Amino acid sequence: MWDDFEENWDDDENQEDEHSDLSLPPLLKKANDIVRLTFALVGSLDEARRALYGNLMLSDAKVIPFLFQEAESSTDYLFKMEHAVLMKVHARKLHAMTYQLAGEGTHAEEHLQLLRDAIKELKFLFAAWVNNFDSSQKKDDGWGLFLS
Image (tube, rainbow, N blue to C red; front, side, top):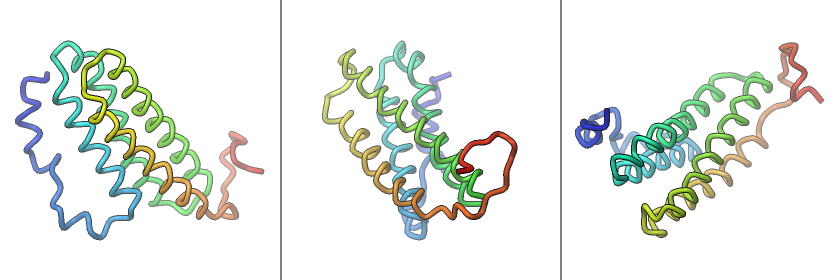
C-alpha cells in the first residue's frame, strides 16, 4: 500500500502548479498547505506508524479543502454550516494527531509545530469565512440544526 508513496508524491495530482494557487481563496490555499505538510509528515513515518496513522492523517487533511469547495458551491446556510463543522472536526483530529506523534517521538517538535501552526492559521481564516455566511439563506432540511 505504501510502497508507491514516494512515487505518488511527485504525481501531478499531489503537486500543484505554484501559479494555480494565486487565484485560490486564502482558506483553500491554507487547506492545501496542510495537505502538503501532512504528506511530508506521513512520508517520514516508519512503516508501522505509517500503517497506523497515515491513512487517518491523510484522510483528515485531504477532506478539508474538499469540504470547503463543496460549501462554497452552495448559497444554503445549513449546507455551508454542516460542511464548516466537518472541516473543524477534521482539522482538530489532525491537530490532535500531532500530539500523538510527539508523544511517540516520531518527529522533531519543529516539524509537528509547522502543521500545528498551519492549522492555527486555517482556524483564523475559517472563523472569518464562517462569519460571512448569510443566515437568511436557509432551507429547512428537517434536522433542526442551525435554524435559530
